Image 1 (tube, rainbow, N blue to C red):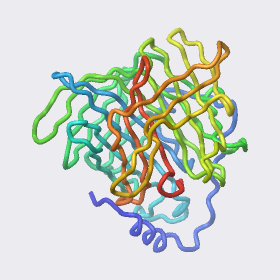
Image 2: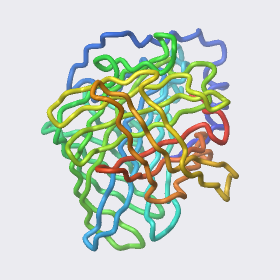
Image 3: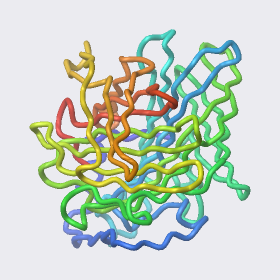
Image 4: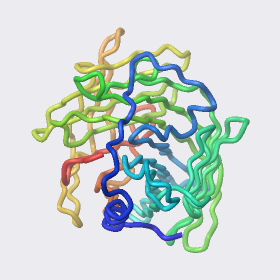
Length: 356
């Protein structure tokens, strides 16, 4: 399948969609009602959506690896009145990355295509996504399976839930800015048990580990002042799950912040502005883009029992992902260790402001 780059997508839009009526995207409303398995599937009326898998893996000889597999769906707002099957009404794109300290830098690949023809599809009834030779599927048992084929590595992973869905924000309504419509529908499956294989250099290696799946969809996510965000998801050793994020303006000040802490017994603390504070302990300078990323952070949250703090240390400082070849952003996405847990830290908008 051909993988379209951003200039070609723009050209396709101009050819097919000149004079098309404006599209109205649905708003994210408070007090959502999730229905499963339907909400594991796509929500094509909304502007933006993603299935975001991050995890720590261990090889049989004890090496630690980080892995990211992400599928995105974007409604272009164009072509709704065009009967052609070639009109790019929905775009699917995906990133996959491997953090291997033995290599020393992030290894990644990507795919992008308009939806259709059975080659790029995202089902609405459950998680069933295919993008050329990449896929993410949820079985009736609840198990997720993902398959990625790239020039530098192959992934065949099975992800088994060990905990129930964690609804982020207020029952799944997660505000990302001061206005109520600046929000997403957002739920998480933490502590996924991972088995499978990774193939590098023709060698297939069994791996085990633990992963995290974020599901979000939205139409208006960011405040106009926002340039990017810092986000972390942590699987803690005691069975707790911590999510924390801040949306930043161009000065680095928080426009909004939030997250959640769910204990192993299911007690959940919802975090809002004023409850989350990131501080930089160490930066890493990218030799490729010249960007400085705060790759080692301290994270402090306020809970009813008092403040709690973690130090986030990267498995590998060089975890910059450059997706500009497919029309995407440059961002940092890396596996991090902390006291009593492991997870992933995402840093966007440090090279240029992020535009969704």
